[in-house]
Image (cartoon, rainbow, N blue to C red; front, side, top):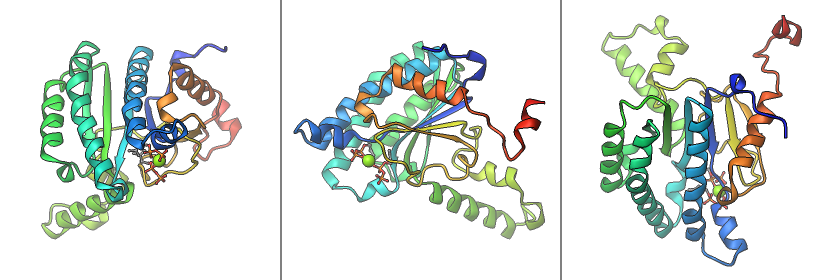
Length: 244
Ligand code: IPE
Ligand code: IPE
Ligand code: MG
């Protein structure tokens, strides 16, 4: 296999972790079994990303639309989240990983919020990698809440309308501390964004794999990264301009 070039890794890697339910159903189990098995894949992705030296890893774990799932499934997902935060805490410290969360965090159960707050606070000085969990996150909602904040700023004479530019919008997004997404991976074979980071993925390289999330391992991450390294990111320019 072609080796990875460490100087050509994405600065910000994001993953839409999809396919837990189908993975479980294929095995005659309920969807929750798939979510449980998906935790191992999260561990693998986080450890491999930090080992490779990727500075920002963002995982889409629960969308605004996922609130429409059966109450029982939501409950289990929230329990798994609390349990994982507790179990992984030591490893985050050991690997110097800083945890962040983006989304409508105030909609999450109190226990999840408390656990998140605790881990975020305790890991805030870690500097090897920023691991961001997108929780109760929606790309449209992110833009909407930014517009609301900016409008309030205009009303209170803190922002003048003609000064509103891309950097001001960036500063009001949930993701204000994150750079743009370079590589966006989605597992499970679905080829859609599902209301993930619409603004932040404007120029992301998209990579779709048919692997269900619970089966996702180092080799799959490497395949995605290799594929990314062989792309030419032109940002609207010509190939000749990029090569010059
Ligand atoms: C991803 O797997 C996990 C979440 C969205 C929380 P799914 O639960 O969407 O699994 P599929 O897509 O139904 O197989
Ligand atoms: C997207 O997966 C959300 C997460 C992975 C957290 P979904 O399974 O919710 O997406 P759709 O509904 O199939 O587009
Ligand atoms: Mg899904």
